[in-house]
Amino acid sequence: MTDVTTPQPGPDSPIPTRERLLRAAAGLFRNKGYSGTGLAELLAAAEAPKGSLYHHFPNGKSDLALAAADWASEQMRQVIAVSFDPAPSFQEGAKTVCYKLAKLFDLQGKWSGCPVSATLFEGPENEAFHQHAAKLFEGWITETAQHAERLGLPRDEARAAAENFYILLQGGWQLARVRRDSDVIRGLHLQLRASVQTQKNI
Image (tube, rainbow, N blue to C red):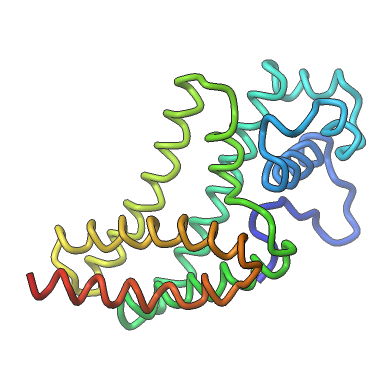
């Protein structure tokens, strides 16, 4: 699995300026957060002139942050799809997601944050960023809940299982960063299984 939080160029093809900006923003925001990334640093990493930033993203850094979060969110949705589509059960699909994200965690160097939360939650205190983050996370939860229902969970349980999964993933990623240990993420599906079983017994 490739690094799904940073856009990758095609083989032997030049990287368009917009893609270079997205790629640089996704990496820097993921590692340093929105506030910790300076505009000059971002432009240097993208090897792009300042004018090109405002050509592609009229509001500058804030527009770029929203676009980078959208890109990373779409990659996460692809991980969800390739993990759950062939899965025989919700638990097996969740296990595959955990293993793929653990591998990504190792590839990133064990200190990077969630690309959406690092970009939008640590960004400026404005309603647009908060609403955008909520929309992206809700998209992950809704898609995962649909897979859970398709794989046999009742609708209410499917929604609860999906929400619990992403609560576990967010907390587990932070703990893995502290410990620098991807096994924290790799084992999250076991806690999800226990949570689903508890719901069935209530």
